[in-house]
Amino acid sequence: MVGDLVGGPGRLVLAQVAARLRRGAGVDFVVVNAENAAGGKGITVKVAHELFEAGADVITLGDHAWDQKEFVPCANAEPRILRPLNFAPGCPGHGVVTVPTPHGPVTVVSLIGRVFMKPVDCPFRAADALLASPPDGRIRLVDFHAEATSEKIVLGRYLDGRVSAVVGTHTHVQTSDEVILPGGTAYLTDLGMSGVKDSAIGRDLKAVMGTFLTGMPGKFDMANGDALLEGAIIDIDDKTGRAKRIERVREGMSGPAQNAFR
Image (cartoon, rainbow, N blue to C red):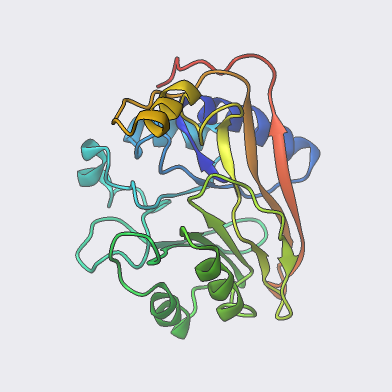
């Protein structure tokens, strides 16, 4: 599971590192949070196709899901691109998908938090409603796109034993609290960011610094430089759906990740 992918550099590092992990680490299934994949804001159909070609099996989004207006009318067309399940009823798109694999069906769920975020429906109740009639298969992966660490921690404990993994996204800063919870659910508060290492969460440092120093709004261009992929590898028993191991990933590529794909 890959943390917030930012712009062209994030897409480039995904293509390199995902292929390497599939070969060397035995990775079978890749979930990518890509709500910042198109120039740092939202996603487009073209960018989504690029991510699938780079190795993503499912793409999750978040609070920037609708930033690229051209994507909105296409949201229903590809069930493997998920906007949060607890967006208001009537929103286009899908919040959950079950994908057949050689290891059995894998269900991916996208949820979004409410603390310090725009108003949405309750993620806890949305998860309860979904799990009241559980999807096919035992492997269930939850991307919880939320700001508050407390909300993420509590949702992880709330779903412990009912899903295989709960991982957080949104802050772009990887945490070090990976754990297998008592009920067999893998948990990590935040997967981190896939983008330029020396940046302000993917944006040019000087531009962001200027805004902090002056309080004036500015244009936050994408950063350039060496990129890192951050996330976690989760080993799951396909018979029980319980996680056996979770390991943080922080792997880079050499050379500048320019904005050629922006």
